[in-house]
Each structure stands twice: as structure tokens, then as C-alpha cells.
Amino acid sequence: MEKLNEAREVINQVDKEIAALFEKRMEAVKKIAEYKRERGLPIFDGAREDAILKKVQGYIENEEIREFYVPYIRDTMNISKLYQRRIMQGANIAYSGVEGAFAHIAAGRIFPDGNRISYPDFKAAYEAVEKGECDCAVIPIENSRAGEVGQTIDLIFSGSLYINGIYSLDIRHNLIGIKGAGEKDIVKVVSHQQAIDQCASYIRNQGYKSEACENTARAAKYVADLNDPSVAAIASRETAELYGLDIIRENINEASNNTTRFVVLSRVLCKEKRDHSVIVFTVPDKAGALAHAINVIGHHGYSMRSIKSRAMKDLIWTYYFYVELTGDLQSKRGMYMLDELSECCDKLKMVGTFKDNCKI
Image 1 (cartoon, rainbow, N blue to C red):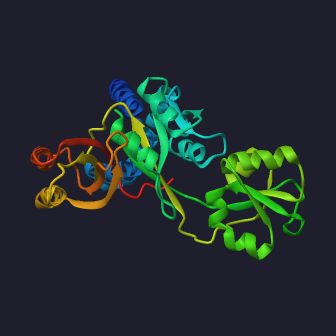
Image 2: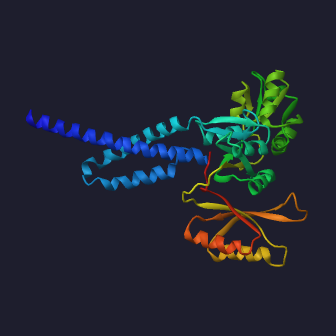
Image 3: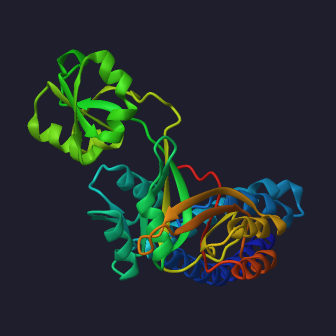
């Protein structure tokens, strides 16, 4: 009995110490949540959690109990995420379009606990963050089939926000209609012109007429409101569920590798080390100026993942460049590169960092 009481006393003392450490840990978690909210970062970071779980195994010398420590830490991290969600529930996420649009879907997957707020266009969503109405904006920047979204890149160049993440969303188009409608009932399909183009072979083979709409979500709403079995929309599974429509045929887009990249924009630059960085710059109008800038980037060991040339709106026949680089520019090496690059650029701005291959 004495040994039992002694063991219980040890446990009571340890629990008291753990409680104090738990409070200290949750104070740090709160700061992390506030940091993430300010920078428009998602709560879950799978790579970091995996690294932590691998690392903590080495903290336990007793092999007999080591296997029990990993689930203990995993549970602790899950509790931390719940606390972060409570703190971040008020985060307002701006997107362009209506409920069911791909930007709405992307914003929901990146920030499952955020308040998604619709704006009529990219500029309005961007400015909502600049004005403080929203904490961050989720806006498309590139499609694997249609190419770059020029308006988004122009906003990044001329505005004050930073990129704190780029996420890839697989675009899967489905033929959707009212309850009970089948392929043989359909006469006309409505959708965004880009979606119609990406499903052109299917539409042609079925002999359907097509009509362009503002976006896929509005097309779905139109079909739901019309309640006509001969009219279908092309949209996502989430959009069909939102408007109470059936999926008549899945994955009707011609290419299976149709992906849209979305940027997360906020007022503060994330200081965490990331795989990739983004800069925008202009160069003097003289021979070799762009080549010189590119050589500076390469000289410091950075490779360009992509470079895009965009016309400046206020200066005719003048261009700026949007560049995604592999590597972290917030290191000493990155700072040296930016210093040297600034000497050969008229305007240079680091506009963000992001992790590679973030699927949503």
C-alpha cells in the first residue's frame, strides 16, 4: 500500500508540473495562432508535424515506453490545433465569386474554419485585405491549361500585400443537372467559357448546345432555379451539392491534369523558412539589363522556377517581371542577392514565400 501511495504521489506531482508546462505551451500556441492569422497561414502543417513526431522519439531513453510517447505528443498537437481554431475562427477570408466557385472551394480547403467573404472581382478581394476588412485573400494566379491570371499578378506588383502561400487545386468538371435528369435529357449546357472549352470534346460528342455564363457556380444556380431537365451545368462536385443538383457524368474535362494555383495574400510577410520565394522587378531600358538581373540571381545559386513579363498599365511599352525562385530569400544569401539585384533594377520588391507542392 505504501508503494502504491508513493507512486500516486509522484503522479500527482508530475501532473501538477505538466499542468504548468501545458499552460506555458498553450501560451506559445496562442502566439502561433495570432501569427498565422495575421499572415493568412493555415493551421495544419503536415511536414512540420511529421518532423516533430520523428524528433521527439529521441527524447525518451526508455525503449519500453518510447512507443507510447509519440501518440501522446500527437494528441497534444491535436489539442493545440483545436485551440488555434478557436482563436482563428474570426479570420475573414476574401475571395472573388459566389458560393461554389473554385475560389470559394479553395478558400474553404485552405482555411476550413475561416469566414469566407465574397467579393465581385479580384481587385475588390485584394483591396478588402489592404483596408483591413479581411485578414487574407485567396485569388487564382495560374491555371495549368489557360496560363497566368494577369490581373492577379498586376495586383501583386502594384499593391502592398504579400504572398504567404500558393496552393494547387485540381479542377474536375462534372455535368450536373436537376434530380432525375440524365445525359439523354440534356439539350444545352451552361458554364464559364473556360470550362466549356475544357469540356469541348464531350459537349460535341453528346451533341449539346453550349452557353457561356459568368462562372461555374452561377451556371449551377441558374440550372437549379430553372428546374429544367434539358439544361445542365458544368461545375464541381462541391457546387452540385451546394445547389442540390445531381452529378450526371463525372470528370468530363478533356485533360486530367487541369490545376489552378491560388495565392494567399496578407498584409504581413511570413518569416518562416520556405522552399520558394517570389520577387517582382523592373530593369532599365537598355541592352542586356534583363540578362544582367538574371545572371545575378543565378550567381547566388537561385534558379528561376518561372518568369513572367507583364506590361505596366501606366507606362506604354514598359514591362515588369514576376519571378518565382527556388530557395529562401530571407537567408543571408538571399539578402546578399537582393542587395546586388537592387543595383541593376529600377524597382525591386520581394513579395512572398511559399512551400512547394501544396495540394488542397
